[in-house]
Image (cartoon, rainbow, N blue to C red; front, side, top):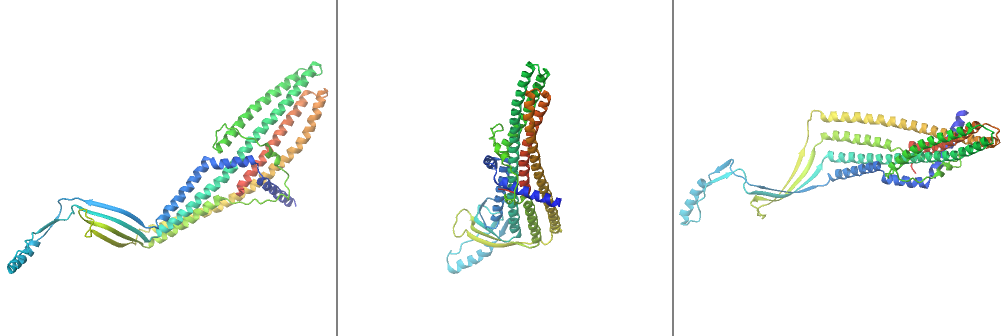
Length: 452
């Protein structure tokens, strides 16, 4: 029965947490928006995402034909030559024909001596290359697509983490400001006690050590104020750092956020549903690994490309019909044996996939544990608020009575100082508990992947 009651209280509390989470401070919302816009770490995540998108666009471009303009010009001299006795073969025939016709219509031809290296030769062309069958291109695109998803989820996860960090930093800053306000209020009360003590000393109702005791309490308070001011400066600097602002820039204080904490009720129903992009990142990694396995399996297939050249080639830049040419060829490459490299790569990828799947299960359990711990932390934080509120009511009444009795000389000064110290400490504990509740609520929202 006790477990049922605890579960009911926790669920009811979480409903209240969900409600307050949906109605957060406008000042807080503005700061979160500013942080998401200006934070340098988030900007880096966004740039990495954009870079991965460009890599995917590059991978898609491999499916398109590649067209290039190529030109070459060759000057050569010497080297191997070929002797072709064309004159010795043709000249006797030409001489006989000239005798028969009684003319010089058939000239004498010299033997040919041609070098192998072309001299004054150019080739100017357009080359068109189109992959016809290449599994590497297809699976490379699939892998790049998963990498885009990884970067997108990385950026989304950091957005939620940054939102939580901004909330926590703001609450911590407000917490220090509230403690300083309580100290200032306590200073006023201590000075009033000092004034009353001085008055009672003049009347010889108490001894002078009462004045020294009150002054000592004030000096102790000043030391605590100095320490808290340092904490406030550090909290403010970190908050401004998250927003990429000047570290000393003024921060607007919205003290109403702590006053919006209400007792959770069933009427305050609101869903706190979310997703953890970290799990999606691991799943994207598994998907990319599966594509890599398929890529290595398809390495057993040939790669076929179409290549077409069209342009001019010949001796001297003439660009006439005699130099015009075109050439089309289909190329095929088939790796028949590579020392079982593909098999080893496939096995490596399968092992890596198993590692990622194990990591996914482990991370899921870690997140479930994180959510459970966060829920209990929220429950404990709210119970602490309730306890301190009850104690505050009691000590308020005690302080009123003690001040009256001290003014009448009915109790020694140190009893009043002790009551005053208890009053101040309890107010600080209540303020800390209230902002701690808000911090735990922000951590719970992050744990479940909730985003407004």
